[in-house]
Amino acid sequence: MHIAMEIGLLLLLSLIWGSSFTLIKVAADTVPPLTMTAARVTIAALLLVLFVKIRGLSLPRTGATWAAFFVQGLLQSALPFTLISWGEQHIASGLAGVLNATPPMFVLLIAMTTGYDGKRITMQKIAGVVVGLAGVVITIGFQSLGQANAAAPFAQAAVLGASLCYALAPMWGQRFAGLPAIVTAAGAMSCAAIMMLPAAMVIERPWTLTPTPEAIIAVLVLAVLCTAIAMIIYFRLVQTLGPLGTTSGSYLRAGFAVALGILFLGERFTWSSLIGMTLIVLGVIAVTVPVRWPWARG
Image (cartoon, rainbow, N blue to C red):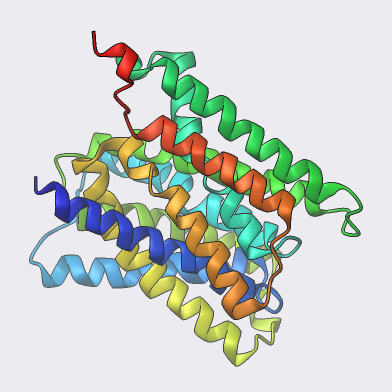
């Protein structure tokens, strides 16, 4: 494994997924959550299956593998995409990006409570979780004070729920280590499409919607770049960097989300959000980057 290449791919994935928060915000006014997610995963699934065929590969035929794909599709795409899309109807894209920077802390909390990869738990990582969670509390607490939108706290909780999904997804995804990344991505995305299409058709009746041209373009970019291409990179990184390494790009994703929201959407970033984001970033760094403390070298 060429670590420099993997880190480069992690940076690229962080930029791609950071831009998704801006694109979701653009589409959210005229495209409801289930329809947006269904369009993303369906277009991405078709492209990924086509890529598999072009590469001369084939999808697995065992029921157990497809059952695992369904869980992966739910955790990695169907559920978090929907939660974030709904959440961004009520909060800024930059704030959503900050709150969605927490998967590494969820990974460590899961490890601490279940013993998953427990040998890697250190006091530095535990301190990182405490600092990061404090950042989440500060961000949500101050944002909620005087908030005219009563749904905002629930939207923030929805985005945190998406973060939990993103923490569980790479843990589950390690079971696909024997498959090419593109095959895993195609299988999981196909299952996500099977889940989301009927839900969108029944609940939101997308044929009755009138999305703006900007929203249509945003959904297409979300499907092709932020879903199909991003998932190929993602499943490669799950195999090379592991769950914690893969989720460590989340704080970079938060930075990109905030910057793009300010540049393209005119979003304001308050001091309380800045303090909260700083604590979240410090917490995630403490969880993911080992530090050799001088007093511990002996």
